[in-house]
Structure formats: C-alpha cells, structure tokens
Length: 198
Figure 1 (tube, rainbow, N blue to C red):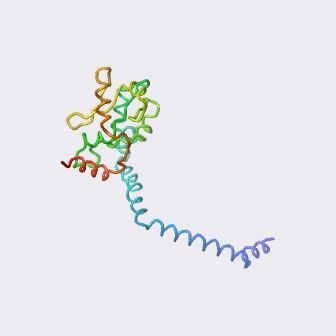
Figure 2 (cartoon, rainbow, N blue to C red):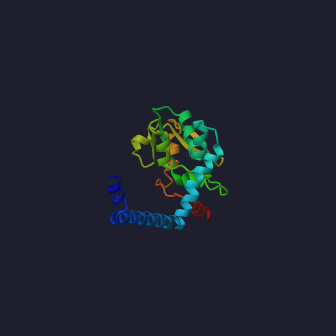
Figure 3 (cartoon, rainbow, N blue to C red):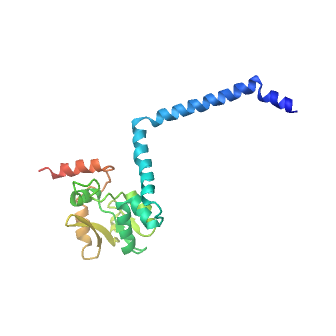
C-alpha cells in the first residue's frame, strides 16, 4: 500500500499538477505585486493603511475607547461628541450647508479648519441618538430643528434653535446651496478662494 501511495505521489500526472499549482501561485503573486506598485495603490497603502499602523503604534497600550476614537476620527469625533452631550434622543439636529461652513469657519492654514462634516459621517457616528436633518428636508421637518452648528468669530459652535431664532437661522442657511460638494480639502480651498475674490 505504501508503495502504491509513493508511486501515486511521484507519478507524472501528480508532478504536473503540483507544478501547475506552483506556477499559478507565482503568477498570482506577480500580478498582485504589479497591482500594488501602481501609484494610486501605493498612495492608498502609505495613506490609509499606514495611518492605521501609525495610530496603533502611537496609542500603544492606551486601550480606552475614547482615546482611540479621538485619534481615529479626529474632528468628526469632537463634533459628534458635542452633539451627543447636548442633544437628547428626541431632538432634531440640522446639518448646516457645507458652503456656509467653508465660507464662514474656514482657516486657510488648516486643511480641515472649516470643520470637515460629512453628512454620512454624522449619520454613522450618531446613529439614532438624535434625528438628523439637512437643508434639503421639507420645511415641516426643518421647523422641528432644535440644534445646529453656527459660526461665531470664525469658530464653530453648537447653537440651540428656538422659536425666537429659527427664522433667522434658516434664512441664513438658505443663502447657500445645500448640496454637499467638497470631498477633499483641496476642493474646499478652491471654493473658498473663488468666493473671496472681489
């Protein structure tokens, strides 16, 4: 029985099979290396993947959730924490138009100084802890808004929306196109500079 097994293992068909498998693995590795060496993929590895390992090394043994979220999510975590602290589950938070934030709270020397608030990031971080509204929502919903971000002295602050200031806040936001458009700091900078020209 051992002899027949040895013959089967070292037969021509078996050697041909394993040679084919080795060639497939080698070819797959070469294709993978070629794909990873493309400029955009190298940038992704150095950026996204590199950031993950740098943060992991930086945080070291600090395993508390708050530290990790602050390091991982940056500005987004700061603002979502502020919303969580001051808004109750039944409240409605109105997301300001991005153009409003860029034009009024943008610091030219900081890539994300205008508060990089993606609506999708707020939805992701806040979940159902508060209702989120955008300026594209029907007016009947906008009338329910209880909080929003406003700009005072070039800084972003959390504003409580009341019956006294609701009309003024909505009127100010309606002066700006409500659609989200700047997905990179460079797009925001170009828009800011274009608006700053006389």
